[in-house]
Length: 341
Image (tube, rainbow, N blue to C red; front, side, top):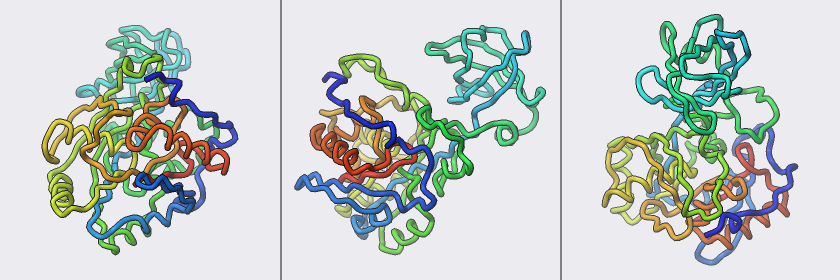
């Protein structure tokens, strides 16, 4: 398939720059795969489509304040460092600006030496492997010095960093938020539980590869980025029981979907599991894990549009996107949501 088949026109004015005051007041476009209908509601109405015994799967990753501003020790030049993923010990994969000036052996200084970083390897696309040095606990140092990284299409500064976290965020490690979950409130989750719907948590730490454009014409040639995931025994048992009872598994976000489908691709049932996934889901993929998907609206020609198209059909999804544009839905991370059932 050609990448151009997943393109659509999006006016820049529809890219949401700030979150709504109330999370669950986002709009919700409901797509029914069985009869091809569309409904236009608000996110709080999602509970109407969840049945007792269903299991809603949420990604509990937490975005790190992993954007650091510092100086190159050799020259005093300013540098930005975005921490993407922990490789081993204190070695981290990072993105640097400007990257060309940082070579193996160069050292960076953040917060008057509260964190220093030595370049030990150069990677493609401006990436580096940096060895960090600090006293105490890294998370505490990042809380003191770091800023919340926002997607490149968001130009405005975020007044409340917690609005780029889900209300259930727990496991620190993401470079970006699992944005489909940003619409849930504690009260809405309580209502869902009270209805008899199960809530399960998985963890997938989102990397910035999710924002990188596909650079090949034929999507079969695209190499997917890897992200770390984890599923507990408690979640695996609950999902297996949901299946045994003939009930549905509803995935919240493409990150949850990638985790669930990775495990079911490799095993006949859900298992306690952790590791790295580079699963690439596009039309033709056979879903084994999920029966429904809650997701935001994604960038044109992105792997996420391909994933959503695979769960339905490309024509149905792009038609829905065209309708959303005409009705002036808000797009991307702080935008509105879609439910596909």
